[in-house]
Image (cartoon, rainbow, N blue to C red):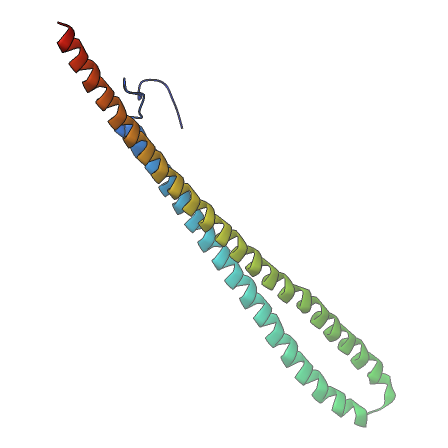
Length: 158
């Protein structure tokens, strides 16, 4: 918050202009947060789609290789080595997919925790702003009352 002195009245309170600027800042932060949230959701969806696509491909490849394996059982031994190599590659692909799924779940959990923390802090900030407004209002009332008393004293002295 800028405090140049130009926005503070003789009562020491912030002007309406300064309070409106404070309202705009949280709105900008919320819109930035929402944009980041949408970006996270979009990226999460992309990762999920890629993982699902790879899983589908791997399953299809497994079915095809199983069929080939069955046909190779009938054939001579020289081709068995190649099939074993391909099967090892499929197993490796499955092993690579598992951490991707775990990473996706971890990121979802982190996102939910960050969102919850954000919401809690935002609620706390709103409560503090409300408390500040109450204090400023009470201070103004007390100062006005004191000024009235002093004015009466001054009038009675005359």
